[in-house]
Length: 270
Image 1 (cartoon, helix red, strand yellow):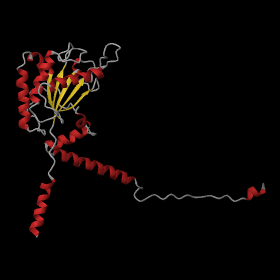
Image 2 (cartoon, one colour):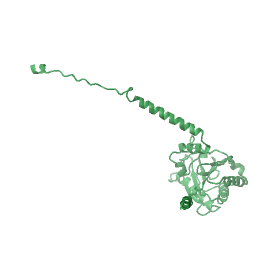
Image 3 (cartoon, helix red, strand yellow):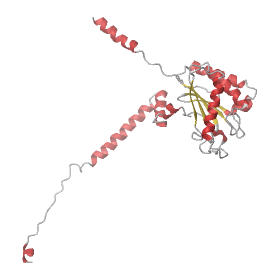
Image 4 (tube, helix red, strand yellow):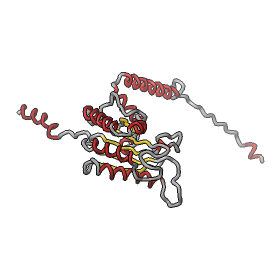
């Protein structure tokens, strides 16, 4: 017990040294300032850029993964009328684009029941090309409800479109869409089968009516996964056939022509 009392008490003092100018907090503030300044410069640059650059930047933020270009389901610009004023330039030449739209209008207008169809045929410009949608009614206009077979009106429109598109060099995709109303019955047949069957029925009819061999690129059924009216999944206008006239691929540069100027310079030095 006496040894414990005699043991000296050791006191340790820890001296904390602060960095100059209040430590490293200024670095965080400086980094925030530089980030804000860079953002300002980007905004100023975008404001002074041409329309093509603005559209490209906007397209990236709408679809960062590029899924729209891959899948052909980009619906940007839908809900426009059949007449497309000031259509943007695509890989299709502007002259061919105007000609195709004009021919489609002329041919569809000539249909005997065009007055009943005009509000249900929507043509839009997307990043993939020209998208034409045949939008259904509650009673079924282009396809009878629950049926994969085109109606008389549907056959007339599909034949007319295939005759026009068959004259173009562009490839074609066909998509089938349904609403979210479950397919009736316990047969196992669902909206997936129905949307795929309608797209395939449109393919068969269009290939026999004007599409060239090898012009069709893809057909797909989306069921109710690409709703036209997301706020109302059961809206009849979600049922539709989409025909996409794809952009022509950009021509690849000829490596021989690209190398020609360099070869000429080498020859002149000799």
